[in-house]
Amino acid sequence: MAICRRCGADHPPEELIRHELPGLTLVHCPDCRGFMGRYRRHGDAPRTDRR
Ligand SMILES: [Zn+2]
Image (cartoon, rainbow, N blue to C red; front, side, top):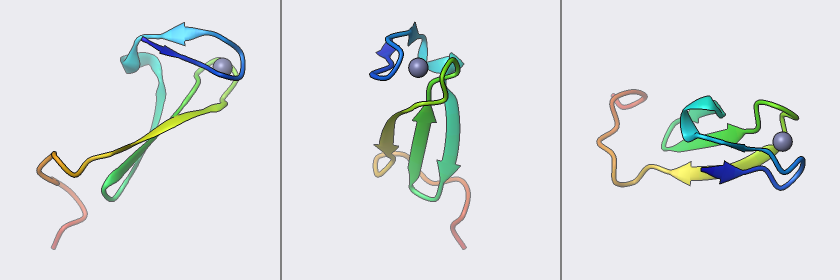
């Protein structure tokens, strides 16, 4: 669960709004659209944006 610091709602990760950037995922609250965090993806094998 991830708890929104702005509106206090908690959601399972699959309900969060995700913005995939190269090497980075930003997540936003689906209720208030507040920024909830960012995840670096060093560990993942990049499947996109690598040429
Ligand atoms: Zn929220």
